Length: 381
Image: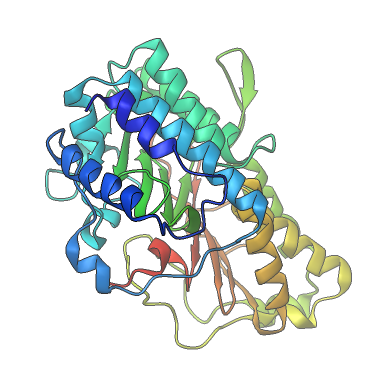
């Protein structure tokens, strides 16, 4: 079966993507399709995942189903542009080990046991790059300086560092894209996209998104640069939002928000090793204006998810404010190496840490959004 024929088979579903397939002939066709895809290097979901526990869909609204249809169309359109060898590199097994292959470092520095999986984007044609961008546009947020726009700026900054001769192993060509499992109307798969300072991990099950984290962003330099015909600073809004939160606190609130030890980013701990007890200042004790600043800071991270998903996450996190804490260490100006801030709730975990200078002369942010229930789609294997 040709790739185009496979694509049309996968698309031959009504708009109610969350419904289970009950038509036996269609079920048989999809089973046969998956078997055929293996010959193209398109591996099915690992059998052990059948017994794993996954999160519930973030949203089941019609808008969420429509959003997934756009993502599925974009994923299949991208596959149409690829050669068989490229498709083999792109589509891999879904399992927890593969899902945790994300990092902050450039891929060339990680070695074979830790480097990212998937299709390296170096050498893609203009048509293929446009298909990648269309997929990111469908899967991520649409607001300026968030989601897909932020990722495009991120790639541009990495090109800037490479072209400036600072880092030869930087640039958008060093990033990788993987489908862990085959994109389809039903079943389980993850859209994984990453490279230096970036990790996108969207997990889908039966036509709905069940996880948009871990979501990692870093940026050096923090301050704007002029590149690709525009002034860009992909992480500046996140940094400024947290600075505004801390600047709004009274001296007593700052004292209570200060963590007993220096905070460290939970990037390397890919399991659920969150602190047993939250630390810092309860968000419930902030006034209305301060709480609004906390919401704005969260939105700069959660807004990287597609718009429907981001709204559902924000509703959940606001409903948990009575059990959510704000903590920081170092300077509240977040201007020095080691300065750190986090929001810790029953579900939400967002943190920003100022990393030492590396490619420039200024500290730069590493930031991470995780969800304690929906990381990796809830898969804890």
